[in-house]
Length: 101
Image 1 (cartoon, one colour):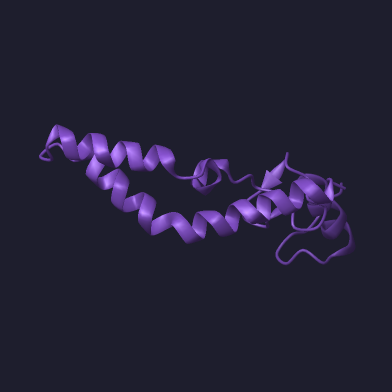
Image 2 (tube, rainbow, N blue to C red; image 1 turned 30 degrees about the vertical axis):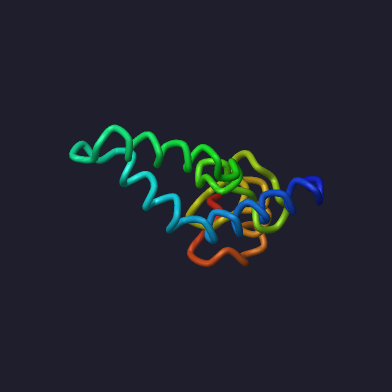
């Protein structure tokens, strides 16, 4: 089980990303626009740099919904490999059958 603080920090980042998505997208569009003047590009990049780092989508970590484990994460199920195996063994993961031979 992951630390509660790590899970809470990641959830806070998710909320911040959702809140600042439009503002970041607009500033990035100006900063990468080739037809914009160098002053506009500079101002947009400076405003983008002043925004909180945790608002960037790249800082969100995929974590298991059951245990909070950050590694061995399956996006399709939103579970870690360990939690997925446990649920598949019991038959609670939909569409997954644990093979045995």
